[in-house]
Image (cartoon, rainbow, N blue to C red; front, side, top):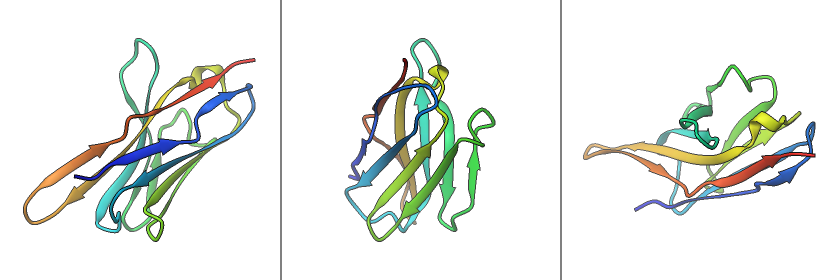
Length: 119
């Protein structure tokens, strides 16, 4: 069982920045994709950013100019740098990782970290 633990959330003023981290309990080199999602109160969970094993990335249109996702396989960690934060970015941010082996195809989720953007 792989555990993903997010950190780095908190309260930030509009226009501020945060860097979220997602630490995996096992190697992530064989994870075909690592992603960040978010869920605001009363809304569905939505993709923020994803990074493939070959480091190709994709971003949600609403955030693509303000976020950067990266992965450090040596540290088993994925990062999400968020800049120019807006109140509407307030949400719980979740890390997920999908690992495909010969035997199974499993997506793991972290518990989430709260990001609150408010003055």
